[in-house]
Amino acid sequence: MSHPKHPSATQILACGAAIVTLSMGIRHGFGLWLQPITLERGWTREDFALALALQNLVWGAIGPLVGIWADRVGALKPLLAGALLYALGLAGMGLANTPALFALAAGLLIGVAQSGTTYAVVYGVIGRQLDPAKRSWAMGVTASAGSFGQFLMLPIEHRLIEAFGWQPSLFLLAGAVLLILPLALGLREPRLQAGGPRQGALAALKEAVATPSFLWLTAGYFVCGFQVVFIGVHLPAYLKDQGLSAGVATWALALIGLFNVFGTYAAGALGQRFPKRFILSFIYAARSVAIVTFITLPISPATVYVFSAVMGLLWLSTIPPTNATVAQIFGVAHLSMLGGMVFFSHQIGSFLGVWLGGLLYEQTGSYQVVWWIAIALGVFAALANLPVREQALQRQPVAA
Image (cartoon, rainbow, N blue to C red; front, side, top):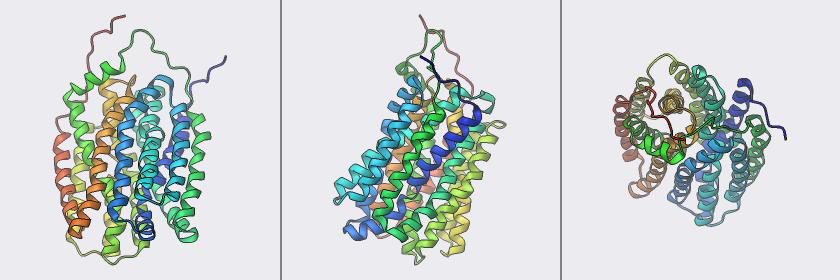
């Protein structure tokens, strides 16, 4: 029985980037469905926000388990399973006629699907198959693809909703996400070999949790999730409340995606040359400055677009230096699992960001409190990343 050859670097980057473009591009547009779904179904913004909050929490909770699976068998099977669940979840979002069913589709199914079709699994292939000297750069390229997906998919999703309605557009996206199936074949790896006694997943996890730098990275990533998912889901409704059109909101999110192509690539490339903890601290501090400026200036299409461009440069640019630092400290044998653990913290933050956005809006009639929470958390994350030590751990040999 023949086994697949090692995929080339070009193949890994091309297929991995295309997969992340689809999986992340589609999810970045979910905020466009908030108003049409809640208005037609008679639900509250909190109902919609809770479903997407559940999605982020499930994605994070399942991520480490899918990471263990991918570390053992390679990326192919998790990607195939994730693509099928993604399509089922999108179709379920269109068919759901109660908040509970909507949460099952958008929250549970798509949350599990994203754990198998996004960064942790794809970055595992990059870590195992690419030269460490190019690892941070390659992660930046892949994260840039997710940003390009946001720029590419948001106008498409907006046009689909306008042309066909919110429900048929979800069915069309369910078909589009199945393109991940053939792309996953490009990330098929040879049978993974331990090459001798190997540290177990539980031992690797205990080691990571006992390492302060891992905990600081995890704390910073919590803030990243809170900020980006709150903005991604609630910005369209916030701008609508300020009297701006849906088109402004769509292009605002698209600009975030476009500028993050450059931001994530730059973060990955700079991570090969400079301490990644300083890059992360700068990103979080700059986000807080950008948000303060945005919410204190008068709202207009011009200020929205400038804010979107600045936030775009900082949006997913935390991903390459965070994951490259995990690989640098702990190695790549359990990279998908450890990356999934850090990402779990990100998704807890995402859950709170999207849910509190809906909850506090319903209670106060405004998003102002959540904006200020996001600002304070950004300052915390900027400080939290400074103590991170990027040196590889020195381990005792694993007993046979």
